[in-house]
Image (cartoon, rainbow, N blue to C red):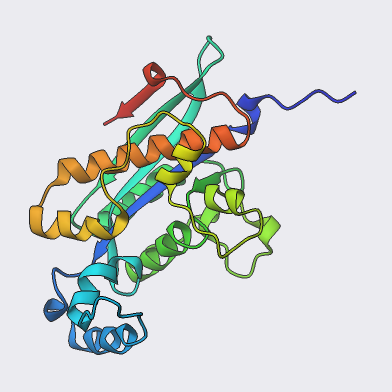
Length: 245
């Protein structure tokens, strides 16, 4: 009778990621004219229950689109096991006003893994984090690492895990924020201070990097715990969470 695969082996070369994005410019007026016209056209198709202008929509939604936003923070986390045989989590937060060196630092981490052996995991990663990263890497003239070279591949050939997809069970219309999922699964974690659409405001108006980085750390820990609960693995104890510089 075959022996079950241990959690150590299942989680080897497993990297959890979470990106924080903002609008590419502080306001629509600062956007390059050609892109500004494109945003004005795009915003006409948004449901305008709040009667927002194109500039208002830019403040609220530009961060969601890789063509109009940028990445300012990337949380990365990996699991390891000591002699106690319990999962330990190492979290590193990358942050930079300048997107190119931020992405280059992310590539340095990802490229440490042997080609074809790295699995990436994010919440809503297949529709947001992974394609957003690919697009912003391309915009900045940086190469796609093997784990993000997904164009033209069949779904089962792509080494990605997505906690939202896991929860959807095929119902693609059903979106659940990570914070709600953690609450439903009874995971004791620090609640997230805000949702992603507020990051631009905190970044441009408040210039509060410590809060943004704390938000990224909280998101990363919550993501890992949610994934472990979903697959029936033991959760990481608070004393086994390591924040790396």
